[in-house]
Image (cartoon, rainbow, N blue to C red; front, side):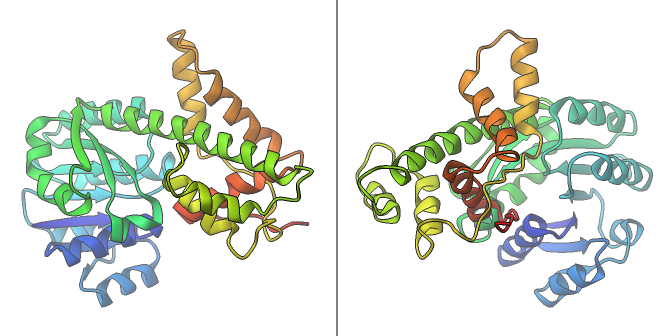
Length: 299
């Protein structure tokens, strides 16, 4: 089917390419003309603006927005609300706060436009492995866009979770869990690193990948990061956070749900910006491995 893709960063560009490989027609736009050119060379139809993208897509349109959460997403959806027609569908595949997504859905509904909030996981590996998609919004809009989800996701890797906001709510919790898992790996590897036994941490990570109870994709990524740089000398133990962990804690506090592990993981990220630790290096390396996030070099 045909769709518009707005945003051709690390995720959007890979999603565009996976959709093209799956036989879809993609009209692609980004404020970076070079990013548009790269996608057109891969088979996409380039657009010079949101207006141009809308003109080049047939009704009922499906326009996927893959831009950073916050003001840019709001501005993009506001402009699309002026350009699109009744029956069209906007898909927000970024990490928007679920309350914002629910509010945007209500505003678009007044114009007869549907919004699907799609929590998207898979990082830079999604091009080949597929993206896990958690989808909120109207059932009819989901059915309209489902061929796109089938192509982007691996088998059993997408689901219509519930009404507007549910997709991004589920992704928020997903990322809270991710924080806690990475913190546990970071602390464990720091204990190994600081051991009196002079252990080869890279070797242990590789051994754990095979048959151990703690094996996982994150452990695979940790082993990959440690291979060739077992002390992670090229990485500063400075860990950013992109918001979802904070939102998870706010929701937990508002609903009196105890999440001490996720809370500790978030606070450890704050601490990493003040203190040096091997745990911080592990977590920073994991973020680089699965999401292509930038790391800081040691000072």
